Structure formats: structure tokens, C-alpha cells
Image 1 (tube, helix red, strand yellow):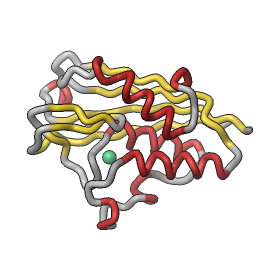
Image 2 (image 1 turned 180 degrees about the horizontal axis):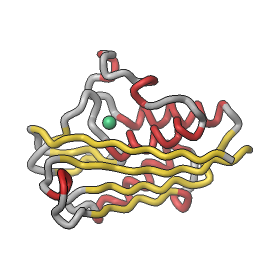
Image 3 (image 1 turned 180 degrees about the vertical axis):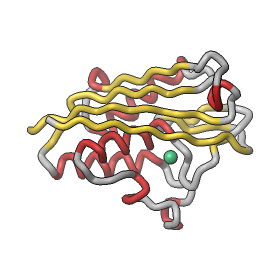
Image 4 (image 1 turned 60 degrees about the vertical axis):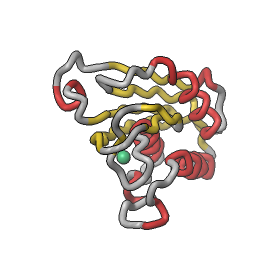
Length: 157
Ligand code: MG
């Protein structure tokens, strides 16, 4: 059994949508990033890579590589999930927390969960996505950016 934790932050920037958990969410700002800025999937990739002692997302998908310019982070997640399977490990469950003062994420949670389950090749019942605010405190509370945490448990197959 292996456990992993991931954390990521992206700042808001110009734009009219953000991408979280592979879901395009209309918003009056975007997220600054080399890739699509999907902070939830980045935290999850880091949790999975942490669990298999494979460093972090920056090692595998460096932001200096033009291949990842504007990249769909679901590509990262699928590749990381393949690394997990290569080690004869399976995802028992994944738990994500997205920290955002705005926009309201509740309407998009189920779609995020389904996307993640599909990319990990597990059932949606093995994936939880939740959103919280920081009650107006800190960078998230000032709507300067979005943070995400992820925890995963892997089991030998
Ligand atoms: Mg990131």
C-alpha cells in the first residue's frame, strides 16, 4: 500500500474561463500557467507521483517544454496513471479539495469526478472532489488564485 499527497496553486490572469478537473468553467478571469492551469489535476498528479516516489509533475512535464504549452492536463493525469499501473499498483481512492473563493464549483463537481475516474480507470465512487472557500482570508479569499490538495491511496494488484 502506498499513500501520496499533492498541492498546487495557480494565480488568476486574463481570460474568460478556468479549467478544473478537466471541466471548462466560465469565469471572468483565467488561470496563469504553461499548461491549461488545471490546479486540481496538477495536485492529483503530484499525489500519484508522490505515492510511487517519482518526484513531481515538473520533473515529468517541465514548463520549459513547448510540448506542454497550453496542454490539457488530463494528458498528464493519464500518463501518470499509466506509471502507477506499470508498478502493478491500482488507485484505491483519491480525495481532492479545491480552495477557491470564486467561482462556485458545486455545479461542476460531478463532471470533474467523472473525468478523473475515467482517466484513472476507476469507478467514480473511488474519487471525491470537494470545494471550499477560505472565508475571504488569504490569497484564495482575495480571489487572487486557486489552490488544490489531493491525497491518494494505491494498493498492489
Ligand atoms: Mg500547476
